[in-house]
Image 1 (cartoon, one colour):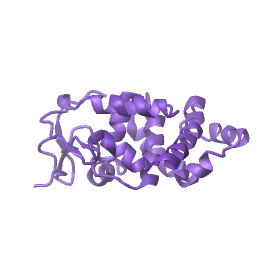
Image 2 (tube, rainbow, N blue to C red):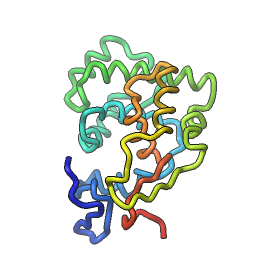
Image 3 (tube, rainbow, N blue to C red):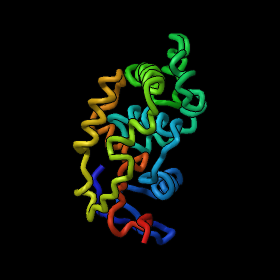
Image 4 (tube, rainbow, N blue to C red):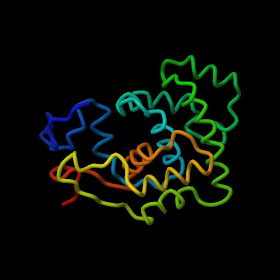
Amino acid sequence: MALKHDIITLADGKPRCGWVSDDPLYLPYHDDEWGRPHRDPQALFELLILEGCQAGLSWITVLRKRAHYRKVYDGFDPARIARYTPKKLERLLADPGIVRNRSKVDASVTNARAWLALAEREDPVAFLWSFVGGSPRINRPRSLKQVPAQTPQSEAMSKALLKLGFRFVGPTICYAFMQATGMVDDHVVGCSCIEP
C-alpha cells in the first residue's frame, strides 16, 4: 500500500499515523493498542501468532479475522494449541474465517510448543522484552519513511526465537510484533496518540 501522508485526519478530527484508515477495527487498534506496552503473556502469544499469520498480507486482513481466530484457536491458549491433532488442523485449514495457509497453521502449533518450552525455562514476557532492555523504545519518527521494517533488536529477537524452534518469526515480523506490543512506539510526530 502506498501511503501519501505521514499524518491523516479522519472524520473525528483527530490526526493519526498515515497508515490507519477509518475502518472501525483499525481506529481502536491504532489508538488503544498499537505502540502500547503489553506484558500479559497471553496477549503477547496471540500477537506473535497473528503477526506470523499476517506475513505477506495486510494487517487489516488479519485484524478482521482476529475475533474468529480467538474462537477457533481456543483463546490463544498455548497449552491447548500445542495439543492440536491433524484432524483439528484440517478443520482449521477449511475455515474461511482464518488465513488458510498450511505453513502458518502448522507454525501456530509449533510456536505454541516452543512457547511452552520457553515458559518452562524462563518467563516469556521478560525474555521478549529483553530485546528492548525491558522498557519501550519511543522513536517518534517525523515521517513514515523513517519507520524501519526491521532493526538490530528485531534481528536479534528473530535469531533467538528461531533457535528456540519458533517459525514465521523473521526480523520484519518481529519488528511488527514489537510495534504491536508496544516494545517500540513508532507513532509519527503529530499523531494524537502521542502523550503531550
